[in-house]
Image (cartoon, rainbow, N blue to C red; front, side, top):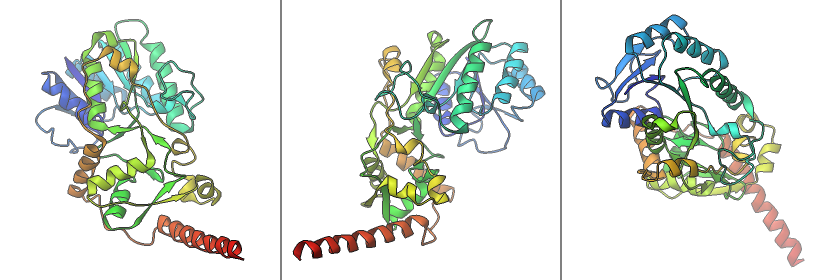
Length: 346
């Protein structure tokens, strides 16, 4: 096959591309920036330009003539309309749209959540737009020469992307806090489920889907087969760093009551306020021989190694918001404990 990626190689698409190359397929990417190929220089064909520019997209399709287009950089409806127009002029066999498991809405109606379980309205512009794009692509590619496959990744930890309850791309701060022996905040009692997996595995799942003709017209959740608690997620980073984590639990309701922008803009009001656990039953049924090669610890090590090499793990400037919250919380709990003891003795 000839597979064109719109955007990338990125957090997930890097391993998708790598796997496709291993299986002898020809891969190209259309990207705005120069560089950022993560070691794939000379292995893939690179077109530079804006995928939102109709002429650029049409010229790229005409020059490469892909069998499949993997849309890994579509976040708004007008971008999807541009691709629909371009594909109508330069048809391909299939469009693979990288959506998100966030389209299922939170709280999930079932754990683990399957593709056909009842959905709730998605929260926020990101998931709302992804759902609208799914629907638009579904209408455009339900007939004619080009078919559609939808991929909905769960949270995929990889070289260039991580998250914590306090925000997106906060894994570097988490690793640095553990490395420096600073306490780490865990909302609630640390038992909230987070469906975290290795981007390496997620990318390989997408590669298998690209290679399977019967995946046309289907939608798949691509995630790890097991969820972990948030405390276990922190321990994964601690294992990758090689130091124990000093976990401090702070009630989620207390954090939300602070009214601080650091909390309002975190993932606590949305994703991390609910259990996240997605079923991969449908994928396993169609690809029973697939193996999840990397553990979550492998992914954390890969993230830390890449961030160290690119200067992403800088020395923390203290105190941070997390330090101030933990200091006040621990002092308050100590005072409350002593007060209770004093009243009990009295």
